[in-house]
Image 1 (cartoon, helix red, strand yellow):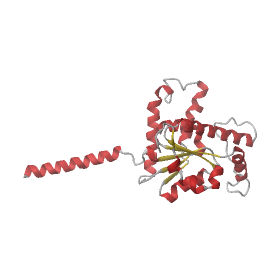
Image 2 (tube, rainbow, N blue to C red; image 1 turned 180 degrees about the horizontal axis):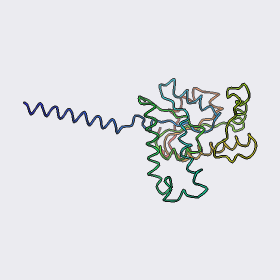
Image 3 (cartoon, rainbow, N blue to C red; image 1 turned 90 degrees about the horizontal axis):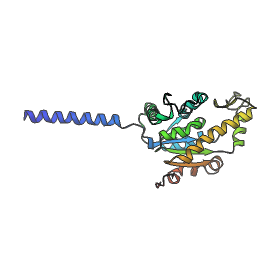
Image 4 (cartoon, helix red, strand yellow; image 1 turned 135 degrees about the vertical axis):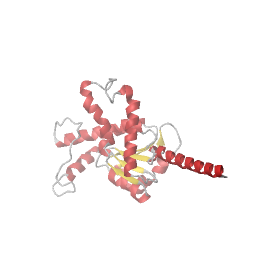
Length: 242
């Protein structure tokens, strides 16, 4: 009986330890439960992300700039053409190594901010869309929303928001750090739109996980369908059913 009681305690302690280790191995934020919103600023991304997150009990992470961090490698090293170098820390020859580390960095950051996530994590990231292709390489199983708007309306909205007395307070919209800085304000904002939307488009066309595309004009016309219909309109590039 003495040995039987001791064995039961040892087994119970082992089961407790196994459960503890399993909880550590299972990330609080699962990649397949992340919904990324990419495109450009002034496309309704804030409106859409809040409709997708808040009323449905999902969490919303606003502008983590993950795509910008990934895109910076191109800006830093392109002058020296070092992307193909095996010596560059973030070089293409060892992409699988550092991209997996970047994935874990994002998941750890998400877990610290949303430790009790029970449903979806909506990540609003329109201003860092230039780095979306790499971000989606790190998260192939995540969901992607590509939101677009007529570029003329985007620039007009940015200029209007920057007026004295407007919600942006006359501060103006900064051009992307990837921009040359040449030309008028309108030209710089237009280039910023192209940089972000081209990145989002490339990721959308290459992503094999669930994804959908929405136009700002459709969002205004029927916001409920656009924000709630994604559960039935996701597209899998790999041919998997939604």
